[in-house]
Length: 219
Image (tube, rainbow, N blue to C red; front, side, top):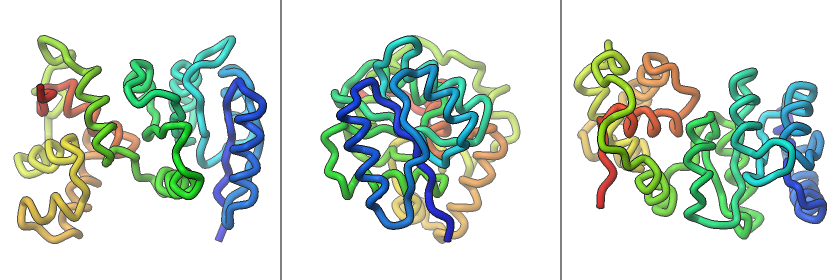
């Protein structure tokens, strides 16, 4: 099995070194580079084509949000945002830019490595309650920012039900139980949603669900 290739982007050398050491000592992973600025992260991602970028939000020259936007627009490289605060206003913008999820920097090493594997496999880190809270906090708008009918054209009523539950943070198993469907059927619906909505992964489905008004943030 091919090792998961990881790029570490953080403006603090000590943090970068710690993450790189963690990745290099983990079975099935290898660090392919370190970036101290957002611009370096974009350049290295284009050259090294990692599977996952561990991206800090606040960096000089180009912040992690813009770096994420450029990386995701140019490739299928997946970005995992690392932040110090669980209600960081920049994190939602990073998800909109294409990131597949986020973690706090004080996440236990084993959990961080597990997160890298999840993101590398094409999933998204959206299950924790803090993530649902963060998304709800930063998508509060008086009206949907995009026309619902046009954005969701071709999506079936059942797929809309699945989309709503994905945006609420339910896992595939929980969705299957809630709708009384098989797990395979739920996975098929999510695959159709990804294709129809041109979404990279589950994180982007959540963004679409909120921005089209399928789901409204709860108070």
